[in-house]
Structure formats: structure tokens, C-alpha cells
Length: 138
Image 1 (tube, one colour):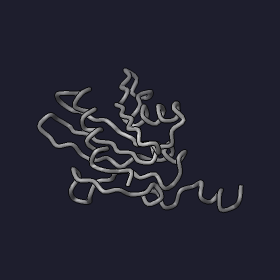
Image 2 (cartoon, rainbow, N blue to C red):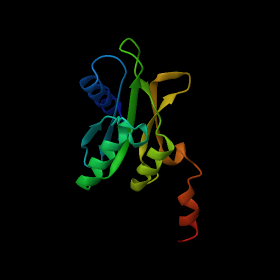
Image 3 (cartoon, helix red, strand yellow):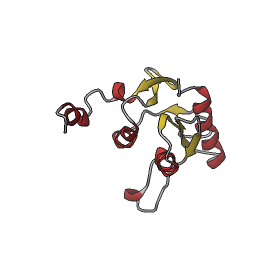
């Protein structure tokens, strides 16, 4: 499986390196060649132009011409709080769709937000809009 504890650990390590105290978060993706790319959010003074943790890693993979096969995002609210696993939001699901419905993403285990499980993108969003277009042959 492309999504494993090492990828989760890479995201946590990036979060701790960039935000050693207080709230922290980061993302990590694995590409088809096995490369791990990490990134953090871009918080601009105008929150409307801020970017989430995953965006940088997605852009870097695209820049390198690498296909993303797995993605994880982690976040904590304070230094004394555990890291939580955050499933990709709708915008990040759209970004991940570039690499297909079989991209693995980390989602929290129900009732245990610090534990993760792997799900394929099509399992997270089973009624993806582009499926209708593809099914119609367009």
C-alpha cells in the first residue's frame, strides 16, 4: 500500500519542524516512484488567499511530473494535543482527482481521530461528478 505509517510520520515530522510549538499541521504525499513530498499551509493576511497544508505537495508533485498515489494531512490544536488525521476536503479531493480515483488518502478511524485508515479517493467521494462525464464518454 502506498499509504503507510512512514508517510503519516513524514507529515508529523514536517509539522513539528515548521511549527515546533502550539498548533501545527502538515501534509505528505507519496508518488508512484516512492518519493515523499511534504508541505505546510500558506497563511496569508487575507485568509481568502491562504492555502491548505496539502497544496504545496500537490503542486510540487505536478511540477516534477510525478503521479501522487497517497496523501495524508495531520493537524494539532496545541503542543500538548495529539495530531489528528484530516481527510481531504472537497477542494483537495478535486486536486487529487488529477491522479485518479485510486489515490489512497488517510482518514480518521471513527471515534479515534488520531488513528488512521487508508481509503481510495473513490471511497471517500463515491459520487464524484466527473464519473458521469466519463460514463457518457465525453
